[in-house]
Image (cartoon, rainbow, N blue to C red; front, side, top):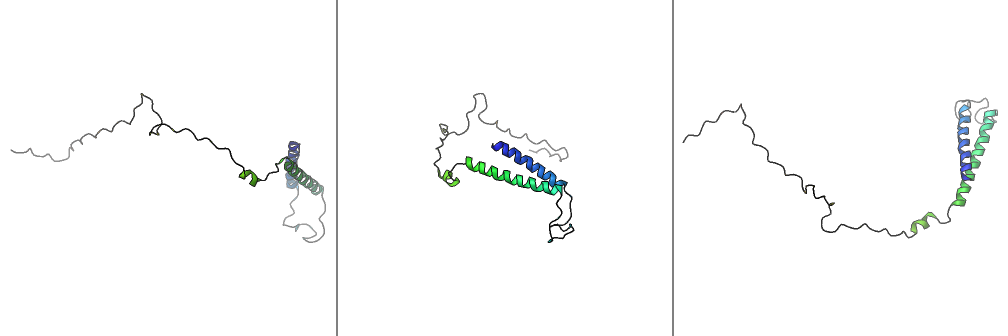
Length: 136
């Protein structure tokens, strides 16, 4: 039943949008573009205006119907009561044994990264002056 009302509601919404977009814009707010003025009597009722009213009333009726259907299927407890309800205790995952919290490594993998090698001695700069040999 709820799905049928929801489908009708969505179709009415699309039809209402289409009918409103088809209507002629009269410019200005509050019917200022009509011949009667803003405060005077009613504007001339067109066929699209009547269809718009019918679709709007049907849209409101389906909205109220969906509200009533949702209220019937709702639980009688309030949200505050549901929050105060005791939650089941969650079990904590087992902790690893030992002092090492790292994941276990396979036997063929290195335990530590390879040690960094010392940088090679810098090559002699060819533009540097030659040092005289030491005299004895």
